[in-house]
Length: 111
Image 1 (cartoon, helix red, strand yellow):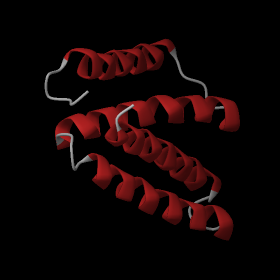
Image 2 (tube, helix red, strand yellow):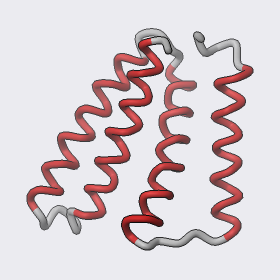
Image 3 (cartoon, helix red, strand yellow):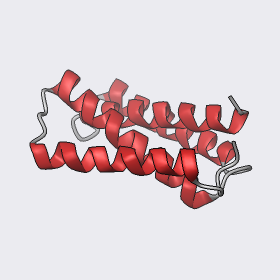
Image 4 (cartoon, one colour):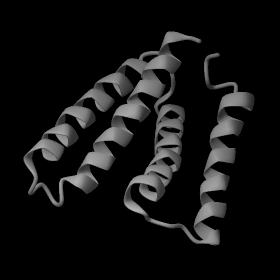
């Protein structure tokens, strides 16, 4: 796996940790989850900047946000009991399809 993809995957993971901690921080009223938000987002953006050294910003952001949406929806379901209706699931499926098309067929992403 090319290093820029590893940076991007780690950025997605850091972003989902930060977003999950944001929910747990209860509007920044709990100190440890609030600290996790700041640290996780800082790490996510640093890793994202490393991926941007090689990949175009539009593609990086599409993959980063698309995978983040999917992971946060799953974390919301498992950790916070937040259920999605059918249109939301279909929409997230379309986002996943878009990320797959970018990764598999686009000539703008270095493989």
